[in-house]
Figure (tube, rainbow, N blue to C red):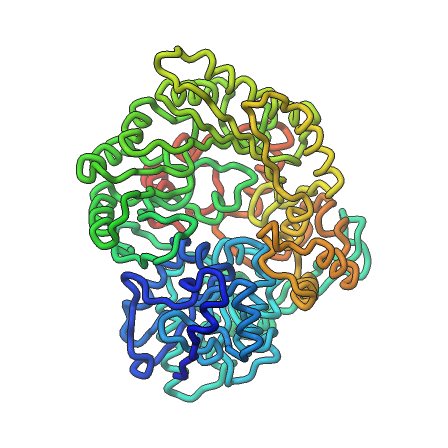
Length: 626
């Protein structure tokens, strides 16, 4: 393979040159000329963000276990480096072998958030690769994508050769095996795509045709709803089923993760303790698409933690999952980790305040104390029932009181504005709950609490996502968002309560991409052509350019964002099967309107449908008990 020459002169002109040189601890180095399949794992954001992504570390390790595959990393260059690359005609390159992006067999993008889409087009362009699949001949790499945001693939459909639904460790090796045969046999790209079309989890957009209604469909006042999604290639299945890893203990996990020389967003060792979530919050896409819950044993977690700490030198270890407290043996696990590694701080993201115990908190406090983050999501009990949070106010206040009595003095509370059925009283409830949390601090004896306290209230705006019970819901308009935000701001008056809020128009765009169809791809391309990059970065977001692109492309936000979907409407992702059925999601949508709470998976089976796919996890236990 070719090699890009990056001079010291260029590196001296850019911020954080370590983003572009590689050479990190535990980097995998192979001879590119001795490897058959070259895979560029491409993260469409800056290095510090991408290097904090566990999925990249897992697949980098997993793919490079194969002798015939070289998985290398590619990140989106910051604007200063992009300027140097364009001025000096330097193509986008990998950090391992400095190979140009266009020389790879595969360019694989991980889709973690909707506002990274323009970065994907920019990276292809910087790599000298035509943007749309129909523009790329046999000489260009195969472009693929996966990750949580891929579950509505349609806005990116024209740009991607194939999508992968599910967990990368499951069947990607079948794709590599098929490509090896394709490459040795001298077959065409079309023949390769046909050879993998039947592999579970693979979606090839060019093999499907989407038709739209010219007149309003039944139950809908708008023209343009989807009339059909049809496979037009005999090799393509009518439904694409996600794939998952059955055993977390048997799954490979990186015990020698890459250690950057640069400060990253999450600069610590990470052990994934389980996948999935038993809770069933109705707004949460991850809680649906990652079902069923699959646990890693305590013994395996300890084994992985020992190896990771030994191979990295980290003094902090994060036990990651969607809801940490749902791990059955959490206290014993943390206690044993502290016994083995007394100088290592153990952190637990995604703590549920209702399950937060004083004994666990005291065990965590053996390491350095950082702020605690809780997510009530809604300010009133009525609205928490609507979203199926399963959390009572008394539990919230008892939980923060335990934290204050343990000496913690920084508490962050996360809420959403614009949730379905939200009223002004629900918005005001956020301020009222924050005040009661502050009162819980003052109600804690002075001899056990810290000297001061800081409560941070952060609100994001609700964005309906595919494969959630709220996928049928309307999204608040930009003006409605701003009214809610300003109303809440006026209600928070105590100086010990700080208020942070998300950008309203950015949430509008996120909603457009989250539920958009193939027609929204033109908007992504137009925004990219107008210079949009790093759209999730507030100082980089070009709101005026996006608004111009929306107008030029004739996108109607009222159609895509601000209308309720009909029950029988064909949704852009209806040809994808995540295991959880559409019928279950609609039942949950109806129960939300009735403010009814559904028990979590350990309490009873709610019939979501994922048992069809489950060979392990909570659903498997339910099968055995039935």
